[in-house]
Amino acid sequence: GEFSFILAALGRQLGLLTDVATNALVATSIISITLNPILYRMIDPVHRWAERQRAVREVFRFCSRARKQVEDEMQVHDEQRKRIAPQAVVVGYGPVGKIVVRLLQGNGLRVHVVEMNLETVRSLNAEGIHALYGDISVPSTLEDAGIASASSLILSSTSVPNAKEVVREAKELNPQIRILARSAYARESVELRNAGCDVVFSGEGEVAFAMLEEILRDFGSTTAELVQERVRAREELYGNSDT
Image (cartoon, rainbow, N blue to C red; front, side, top):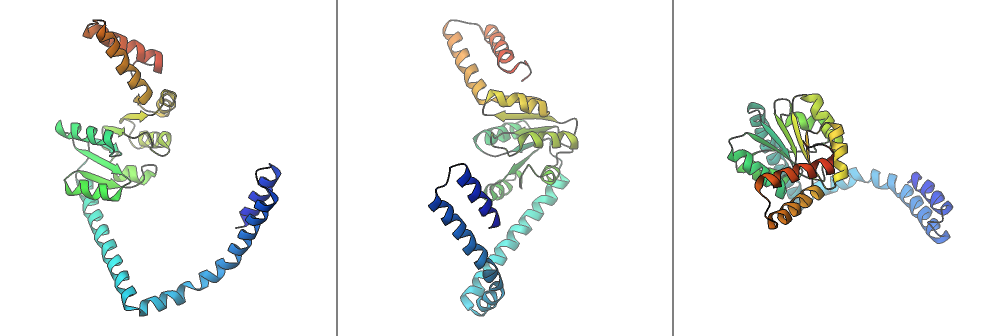
């Protein structure tokens, strides 16, 4: 609430807020600051009243049972993950993540998936795919996923929060791990590689490479020539043929 006063003053100073807007913001802040302690003191009385209502009690019990069920399921799967060390940890189970997991498992590799969608995690665990619900930017999530014993970490999404910090943390926990990441733009690949990524796949770059190969194929280029041109294009785009 108090911070709103600073925002109002700064907004007025920069010409972003009119006098009316500034006064409205300040008035709203005062009302909020006034009501907050009153509402806070009402929590216990309202809670006691709610517990006396049968319908509300049933809702509380239902929510409590549902939460306990989810916690028990997560605990069981956490224990299973600790017993089975992964060979690869895949972050994200979107379209790309699904394909990567399917191909890895198809080649006999043990995969752990880290996903922020709880329903997806429950569905994967029900299918026998080890999945962990959590934010990968939190170091403990990496540890729970088994990063210390994994040989590969795959960031399959372009929206991984604090991707560079995730890469650095993974390298600290497992210096030998090979990290593959996906980026939306070619310029981001340099930052990810500097953070410790071994290979970065850029959406811009992969589209350019696909177009290049299609054009050259129409002109009768051989497979060897296509590979050579792809390597050259990678060096030009990324500055490193390994990316």
